[in-house]
Image (cartoon, rainbow, N blue to C red; front, top):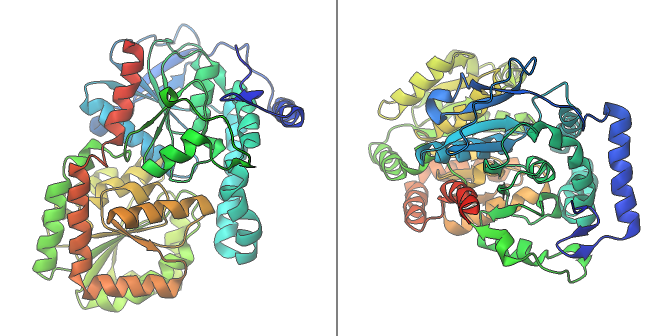
Length: 490
């Protein structure tokens, strides 16, 4: 098989870059071992949290070959390859699974970061820990953010040299795919599951690229790349800026497709009705509903606190209400309550009760909601999908411009975590379903005030969301799944 660290889409890597890539792999082997010759027996299990909603079956390592479940549906099965690194990649995977189920397929959830006995998971966990730490520090230190975090996320990850190392490291992740039938299509929502699938010999791989800032980090030669925006298509097609100012050999047209945003079927199919409800609530002067959702790195507590302090007087007057999803970071809510004692008297806690969360989200579609409702779930699936459930009944989603920037709900963007995220906010503002990024707390408060006093802002975003749906902008998850099966049909 071609060594994908030596040449990337015909662009030959310098010897120094290739040697560094090999050293990176060797260092991980020294730390975590090399299990490339291991034969991991696999078993399929119903996903207890989202199996009834998205039809997900988890892929797990069995205790022995005797226990292995060879029940992959080779005709209708599709592997959704992902890792937990923040919440965004899980969120895209949920959208892919939702679309797959709607189209009549069975989604197999393969999280490469969920097999602690493997070299693969050990490598990913080490990098995930470093990324989460960097995200949290960047939210607290302007100097760290400016001198280290922004350049790393914006420029370092953009270079082909970084992709060369990732490709070499991904060779250590391939063993997980060994006992998956090679004809089953794979849609990967992070580049490592895509690269690993290609290294493992999976025949039909779609690399669903996140964000709106082209980076070599996301390249997985041998897979079909999908992107959510037209500008991303141009950047990836030409590999623009991925070797500083050098003009590179471009990616072949057959290796990349524009699909639109990766969004769950449950959200896309209800866009018109949900926007109609938002406008009716505004017309009836019901409390405006803000959904605050913290990211997987848990780095935004200070901004949340400022928002809640501003909104509490309006909450008490019945002008607005707030959903707060702290994901699996209960400490964030504890710190908010400690810092803002007024929360205690006006909040309801929905903690680690998945049925209660689902019931609340269902009632909120048509019932009046007041006060503050806090949500915490220790389970990662529940922590992430809670936001999906709540966004249908919210009026404004308050979030950093990460993967949620692409969702069909009015959005107020707070300060980004990493320079790559800013382009999500720019794209959203240009298609009319979100604000520009508010880089500090005073500007965030200004936008909250505008939403509360000017219902035209909400109306315009709802109209744009409905128009965007008609244009197919939110159809990316369906198209990614369809493309995966089209690869097999060729």
